[in-house]
Amino acid sequence: MAAVANQDKDAILMYHFPRASTIPSASPFALKLETYFRMTGVKYESDLTGKFSKKGKIPWVIIDGKEIGDSAFIIDYVNNKYNIDLDKNLSDLDKSIAHCFRKMTEENTFWASISYGRLVDNFPWLLKQLGVPSALTWIAKLIVRRRLLKNMWGHGIGRHNGAEVRSIAEGDIRSISEFLDNKPFFMGDQPTSIDAVMFGFLAELVWFMPPQHWTTKFVTEEHSNIAEYCERMKAKFWPDWEDNLKK
Amino acid sequence: MTWEWICEHWVISSAAALAILVLAVRILTPRRRKSVPDDVVLLHSFPRTTFAPSSSPFVLKLETYLRMAKIPYEVDDSSVFGKKGKIPWITLNNKDVADSYFSIEHINKHFEVDLDHDLTAQQRATSRLLEKTMEENTFWATMVQDLIFDHCDESMEHQKIPMIFRLLLKLYFKRVIKKYRWGHGIGRHSSEEIRHIGACDLRAMSVLLGDKPYFMGDEPTRVDATMFGILGILVFGLPAVASSHKLLDTELPNLVKYVHRMKERFWPDWNNIVSKTDCSYLCGSTGI
Image 1 (cartoon, rainbow over the protein chains, first blue to last red):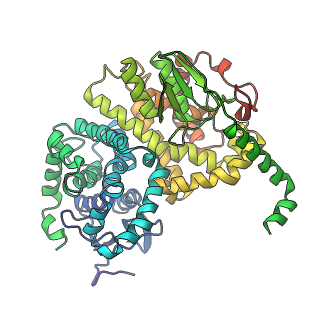
Image 2 (image 1 turned 90 degrees about the horizontal axis):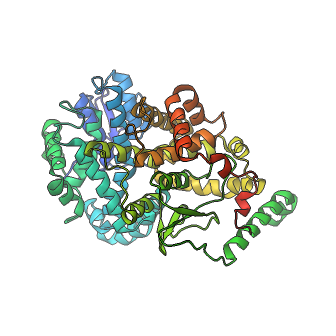
Image 3 (image 1 turned 135 degrees about the horizontal axis):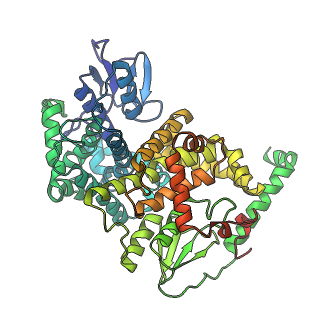
């Protein structure tokens, strides 16, 4: 089952996409989960073959011989298993705000910015970044992109036009910037679990969007506190960032 | 083989055929759009129900917003879907706008309304994330899960949905919604996981409301339209056995009291508005 040679049996085996050229993972959910493991010191090893879980998604893990999919459920399981609570110093009100920020970012902003920017627009760029041979581009567009567009229709975001989707994404990102303000981490002076979520998502906008995409300028210039926050998180939890990029 | 099945199950087949015929007549019969004066919003929605002014939380949200902002409006309950394949949508001075979010943006711009003008930047951020959490996550994990999947029969009975529509929902719409929520992502989880997701959301919202009368303070703001729209359906439109309704009743009384508070303030005519019969799903006020 394990595709990692000499796997440490105490380490969680995490399945996700191969490394990307400018960011350790093209998936904000995989980057979130991997950042969380680093924040908590939980040992993990990576299977970068891009194998999907039974739920058809990445990332997923094998812990205690069990397959667990979905980054949120994995984090819950890890917290219970290792008795971890990064949010122990947060009030109930702050925990609830953090919960809702996670939901908005993962269920709305992700679709309106990352999904739309990479899949609806700029799909060939994404395929090239993922190393898909150009001869297979037309198949990927016919089958994979169509499936993803259907998913977006089902979600609801796919029913809006480009300008409307951009306005939704801008409103969400503006809210994130306003809430973050000039705090070092999302909820205050110390990192909490929401920082794994927000870094996982915001880092994609800073470092892995198509060239000249509006989101990168939005988070590096108009709302530069977001880019500065990402640099802080990267320095603290990814000192080996360059070693985890596609060679 | 299909023909044999139809013959053997002639009652169900006849009911389904009749429902399709009724819908086809409604769709194909040319209707003159209701005309309203300038600067009056025409809200396109479903017919009234017996348990709430609308079975759709997004219609309830939008109509509540119109009342909160004191915008003149009339209702077209002919169930004609908008360009994005959804209800509600609005017409204002001959311009159609689909989707409740964009409808509110358009209304705000046209009438120069801002229910959030007293909020700080941080409060506006919190307001937006509450709205998006509720609409993009909690809605799927509570209302859709309870109404369509976990307690479909009990919910349809509670909502007094006509038999023909119950068949359509079970034979057709349930499959469509299953595909939608697979695309959304939430449909990939088990029912237990989805209920857990919904419960976590509702608990967070209960904490965020606290003992305030409205979500952002002493006076209602834009987000209260969304919160009332969906919580209202959970309170009035779901049977007692439904998980999210039960959770609200047993653990989150502040959310239930909030719903009643919003209802009393913005819907004093609630009892006059709700339908007295269960045929309105087919007939509406305009008839077939």
